[in-house]
Image 1 (tube, rainbow over the protein chains, first blue to last red):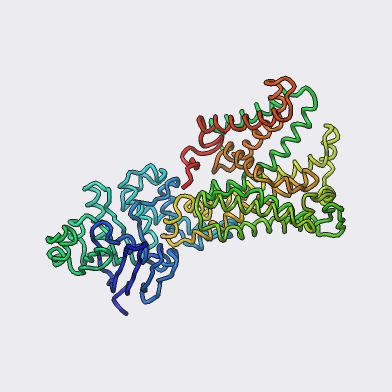
Image 2 (cartoon, rainbow over the protein chains, first blue to last red):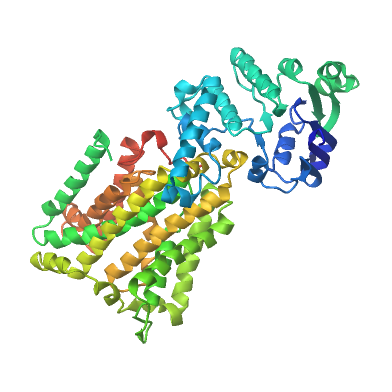
Length: 256
Length: 351
């Protein structure tokens, strides 16, 4: 079995005259913690949107575990085990923290109208199981004391944790994390990094967009640098740190 | 429903509004009361359907009148009736309850049809599409005179339902000098409300209801977690539209005739007002909202008379809108979540 979970070839997306994403080729390896960095407007989030199905690409192909997902809907990509989070946290504000978790843990089958109408005993058992599982994860993330609060009552950091918890409760094999540390205080950022590392050690392949370079360099096994939609570096953190093109992209060229 | 301050206050307000009927009328209070309770039941049912769309799923539907209308027209056309200018009599037809079932299903399917192109739209765009679709429906019904009777409407269909009227309704009506046909409709509407509420309570507390609320909160997150938000929205659209269809049928039978002018946008707005009054997202709220709303509608004449001596029709209509507007304004200031809505789930901020 191939070691690549995601294969991207010639992926392009422009908005009017602006080339947002232009990735010739990018393969991501199983069980690896890869980070995407790049200056503002480098196309990182657009790249995420393209591979998770939230935007359609103009050209190119995306394969997830050899399956072509270029034109797939976000929900069907998610069902293949690749779950994404958002740069601006998207929790279900007017639902409780527990409901947030349980909605994610619940299968489509368990959610069905007919099953809910008839109230099969099997649904009750499933509900009980996913409730236990949700509590386990909430405990790990230290938000279990907020289980019955509305999600909008959480602090910004707790919302990040909830979103993370909601993404992992269904045992995904791949996580796409869009700025998991954005707007989080340094202490919580440490905790979140540790959680991400633990998930990676458990065997989840992780692709992360993050602006906190120090954090990225510390935990990533591989760093991909995007600038103006193109991959300008793709290597282990130590090499990327000293790459001239990267420094230029971040600091501007000397000739300008 | 727990007897909290909120529900006690709501019940008190509802009872005092009914008391207002006795205060403002010197005679015939009982028929007036039962007339407004009939309308309150029918409109309350429609508002419950709308609450499935808006309160539970966050769909901004401004075409509710069309769902009500479609249910009514399909049902009435399937039973014996007389339609159009010439009063073309159709003596054969399906049994009422079969026709009703088909009517409700048609309304639900119309919800699906309307939903397919519109469902990817959010917030106010969906509102525009639904209000346009409802107008298209109304104009089609008006112009397809050979089928729907056009502006001349449909008559002589009441008996299909009235033949099932039970004896105790007749006894109750005659001992109170009431119209038995209307009491029968009132009875059926309030029975429907109870049944629909039991059904919805079951559904909203289920994983399905949880999924709909998730769609209401954030569609993108729902899709990112592997759930088909479009299908969930369509299901909600169909359920709410089916409930609206049922209320439309009851409305037609309450009037005894079916007129295209019944299913105009103002009907939708009345239903919205009732839902907002009662509390968006609350199951029982629309019932109370509907009673209070209909007390105001039916007692406007009395209230207008307090302001103007010998108020004319125009003045009364003006007072009616002022009162409804005032009530909604007061509510938005003091109880923005409606009478029975949860403050925490205040839903009037549509994304």
